[in-house]
Length: 124
Image (cartoon, rainbow, N blue to C red; front, side, top):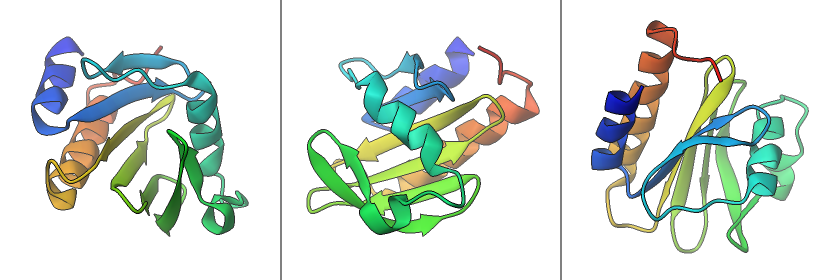
């Protein structure tokens, strides 16, 4: 798992692998997210979630959800964007404020989530 996380670090400025309980398993250096925010993110994958209407609060900013389904959430704020991709027991999260392109960030998150599932690394 460490090698896979290192690859993510090379592609995303601020990213984490987070358990469905909101606890951070791995994070890029210098990124210190709040567990409470991630607990809300885990709940946001539910199709009945209000996040589509209310947005997602992260680092005192509201991110407007632009795409939402049971495995993927994409959202934007005035200053940046976030991408979340759900695995079985965790989700991959990354956000950026225009240091890298949105497509590069999204591709990295999707690829990492797929590798986690494919290699059965989706265990706490």
